[in-house]
Length: 278
Image (cartoon, rainbow, N blue to C red; front, side, top):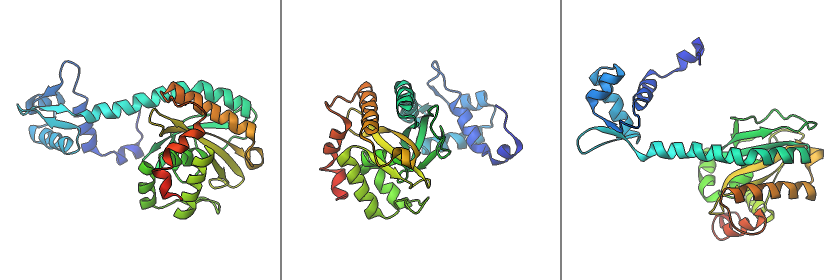
């Protein structure tokens, strides 16, 4: 992949050099000495050493009893996140395609990343309005939109503190930027099993979101559909049922085993995360 001049100016050389050291590991070489790293990378020993101890400090490497450098569990954890995301997308995509046709609206799959929701997949319907707000790889704050707030409501204890510390983002006059209003909305989302986005991201656009639950009944992702407000709101029972059934199907494929629809999962949170929202 080529990098243009502007991108090259933004590159941090030391980070690239450190990442190249990590690339030197392979299945037959789980750990290496400073001398091996320097020889294989072509860097000087002093540069190699500084990069290696930086990677140790960052948690990517550790020193063996013999003084060699080896990968930590962190590399496995990051890889597991990618594998989980790929599995989620693979399981969700055909179901998303089906309900996009049934609902005739754009359907989104999002996961939490810090204080934001990242779009893993988006499927537009054939006739529905194409909304320009959230594309695959894009993100938006967790307090905005149907999918993000479904994530937040069903993983509130983990996600909300950092979001409140960062501050709530406003996009329109309808954005939830008062913590008390947001807490009330999250509690109501858990009660009914789905979130409602009413022009809080884009004027004239509405969305409905619901959680995809893991084995622990906590949201691992969220599915939502959105379009022109008059096509989505107030929520239509048939559309909501379609969304909840899709979330239930994906949740089951990912190991969620509780019987009934995803609304029941809100009951699991009322004694912990929901208590802060009442």
